[in-house]
Length: 339
Ligand code: AKB
Image (cartoon, rainbow, N blue to C red; front, side):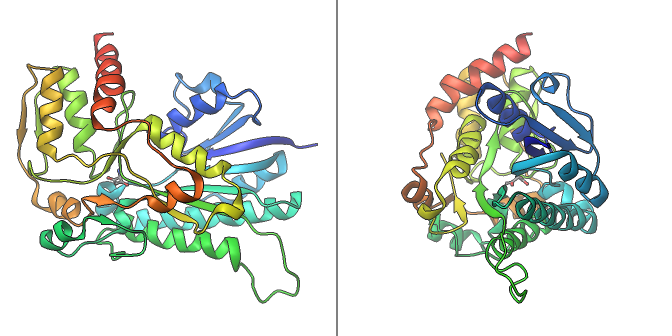
């Protein structure tokens, strides 16, 4: 008999780290199997049942996975983020889109094998939005899921298309086939910029917030690559993990859609600097905007409307800006760099 398992791709990323630790603490869940292009960091290796080192583009590796495991749920976290993707858009497309198709196909095969839909949880992003200019951004306020979905980055295009693919694989896959078959159960959250006290993101364009904080705690100067008045939504990692898990647990009949905005707070870069300075008074934070990265962040909304998530599956962030700094970020980052 195959071992039941939860599969996490891209497990070495910062969401993966938080999610693995959380899942390991829940006694009643199937063991976690991870797939990552790099071997898993020592700090989280003890929490997983097996690590497959490999590429989501390697379909024979995905076949091996469903020969060995009965996968009940997939958290497909592997992706190249927005800044990285602009340096090699075709590679980004392969990893972000073809990789997701491979995983959706594997999850569909797995759903058919077990006679029950595999849950497929996908982190999408505010990068799917593309507001044309700052005046529109200011006037738009909190943007709902279906407005301004004209992304300017390859990563944003990839995430938006993958949302559609997820909907297709959930409801319309092989719709002309003779039998009505079992499909995957795809669900996505559109994450704002994420800030973790434990890890640093790589290759994103919302990275100025975590970079500023971690540099301050490490006693290093930081030149922020966006203007002081730049505003996008953010969330701390515990709330990001909570959003993924709450959406995964929600009864399907309560979901009025498959792609949900989630958010916590929307500070300007100057507000982030002030909060950072209030904890690390010697921090040296300057602003040297990088025009092109600035343009990407300017095309993302200043806030998103997450009322659908609140209504359908009771989403509520535990951390507002003040609590995020006072009770999570500052104490944990300070202790990380003191060590
Ligand atoms: C990025 O900056 O690319 C990501 C995102 C907003 O999805 N953090």
